[in-house]
Image (tube, rainbow, N blue to C red; front, side, top):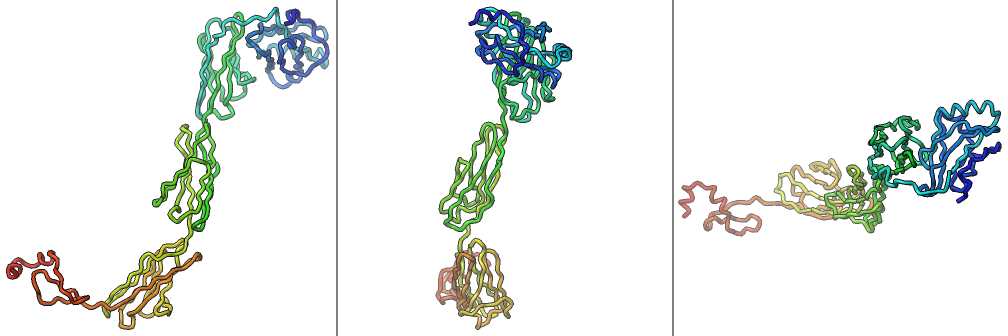
Length: 440
């Protein structure tokens, strides 16, 4: 270390650009031009980095007037890296500016004596990190005692409060307490740009001290991008995307919520489905969670297209003169179009005695008064743009079932094949007790 650090020679009349001093040895000869800073604001902030603060003595600062090198005012540092120049000194600077005619003297930093380690390294007490949610208020507390003569809160290199004086323009930052034991500020409506290191700087009778706290801002999850609803043919490949933001980074979960779901779950922003089947159609839910707030969810509808297949087509027996119905049920996406044929002849809507009723998943052919000519073979054809299918059914004559003389208790005649079979007990119980007695 240089032995002449304790002396402050008169300032040179030349001007240097304002800059932080990052090396303690260079600090003894560095100059900081405050001319431009003085015109902008009511307070002047000078930030000087001295490297390893624990191994440096408390610096002495003097404001020297050019060209006479007159000491205008002493400046007392509140920490090793922040110097406060208050309104009083600014007025002195303003008065001197008029007399100096175009020049400001540099601010000289003098380091007295040989560097020694500072005293109480445990004061002020270390502070735990503060974690708050976006939009809440953050309270930063600094413990002090009667040894403290000056206090300040800083955010990186910006002074927020010095004692009771507010130095920042942000209305969200307020002084919460300035007592003999605590120096605290509060930041309302915290946002992500408030996150980072905050420093409590105190000046004791001997040495300045600092304590740092890191403000952590948590942000609720938010889905910023998600795939649109998709329609795809069966057998194709599907790729779904769900992008979310938050602090900490949210966890993304995909879930198939269709009633016919196959239990598909994925924990990734991207959901890939290869060779999709009709059973995998339905809604897929993206959930983003990070334990800051309730998970946010959004859904994507996946429509799987496939050709029709007929699930139900039964022959029907109807007596002459009665109402008859042939039903054809088919599943398809998009919904199937239905057509009816009898002996290769298409049946048209409005044909006498007939009614064709087509719905999304079935078609009904109604005969209002069945005649002998209506009996025969009928074909239902279901089709969409992906294909077609058909099924045949028969409308046949059903004869009326007639009961014949009894051949034993509970015997019932089957009118379809003329056979006798044992009847159900329920029919017997419906007879009066007197008739039951005569049967046995």
